[in-house]
Image 1: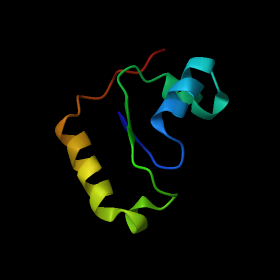
Image 2: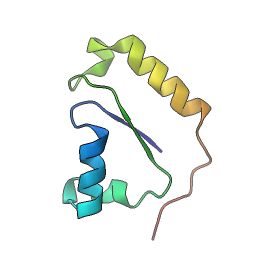
Image 3: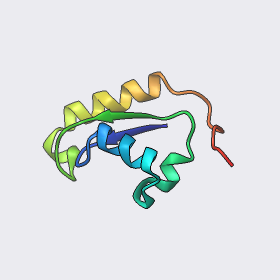
Length: 71
């Protein structure tokens, strides 16, 4: 799974995961995850559409089959 972090950066999300923050509780269950920073606001498709598209394409090119969810 690839998370594109726009408003909250990857480092903060990783801290929240480590602390068991409820905001990322479902994300914490995913074993194979990558969090990619795309510093922009809530609407990256409007503010940085080319960068968003490139990030999605990269994620799709490097993705693995689904099914790596912890119980």
